[in-house]
Image (cartoon, rainbow, N blue to C red; front, side, top):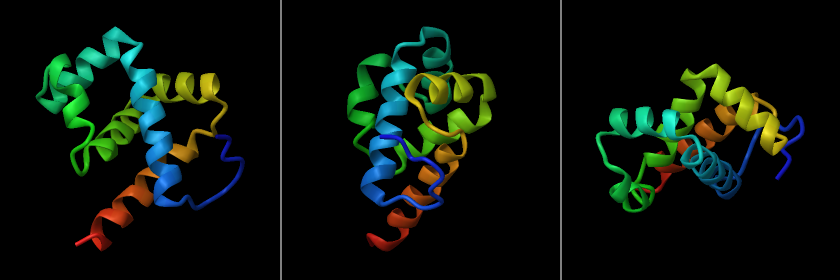
Length: 99
C-alpha cells in the first residue's frame, strides 16, 4: 500500500498500515523490547493485545516518537513518514464513532 500524498485514510487503510508497522517492529528486537516494556506486555501477549481497541494507535505513536525507526519503516515499505500520523488520526476518529 503506497499512500502517495493522500491526506486522509479510511479506517481499514489505517489499520492495515498500523498492522504492517507492528509486523515491521516485530523484526527489530531492540525497538520491540522497548515497545513491549512501554505497553506493559510480554511477547506472548502481543497477538492478543493487537486485537484490543487503541493498541494500533499506540504502535503508531511509538513510531512517531522514534524518528529513526519511523524513517526506516517508511523507507522499507515505501510510505511517506506523514502517513503514520494520518493513519493514527484515522484510527482515533473511528474509535470515537464506534460507541
